[in-house]
Amino acid sequence: MANEGQHSDPPELTSGDDIDKVLGQANPNPTRAGCPPGEVLTALARRERPIGDPAYEHLTKCSPCYREFRALQGAQAPQPAVGVFKWVAAAAAVLVALAGGWFFFVAQDRAVPTDQVARQESQTSELRTELDLRQYAVTRSDQKQSDRPPLPVPRGRLSVTILLPVGSEPGSYEIQVLDSELKSRASATGQAEIRNYITTLQGTIDLRSLVPGTYQLALRRRGEDWQLFPARIE
Image (cartoon, rainbow, N blue to C red; front, side, top):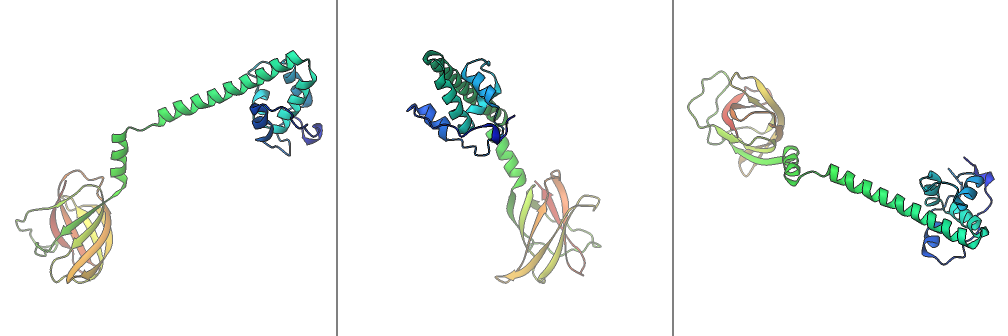
């Protein structure tokens, strides 16, 4: 490959052709990085290289080389010069067509069905939900559960607002979801504050890995006993 010293200043184009204007000005390369030597440009001007030669692609990306090539082309007999110009234009058109086809097929290959996108978004986005525990009496972990309807809880990544039972104190809380063997399957922390006379706990908990079924929602204020509430993951 040639360096900057192997190229003289490329001549200005005098042709009014639109392709000349674009290729001769749109891609300045002041350091002549990656430019082929002069004999390669001469061979291109004489149409001595096949249309698939990568040097033709370089002409479409380097305005100095393109102008130098056109000057060499102009020094040839008129008919060959016209033929070579058409040869370069055809090579550029082929490259553009190939690039466009590649982009189309890659885009088609990477396209995701709308329903699949919706499922992915539902799995990664947070679901806002409110759980009202004011209807439940407080039951500690060492007490037997009474017959109460389980609290319906959606399955997903939840941004949850929990309305705590009457008399609950504000502060920092721990949240856990326990299975039938009282093993923790999900956990989180949150901060409770009094809003409109209701102790309200706000937190985020991920229940996407849980299978639908019956669980226990366990809550406790830091330093206090756990409180259990029946729950059903839907």
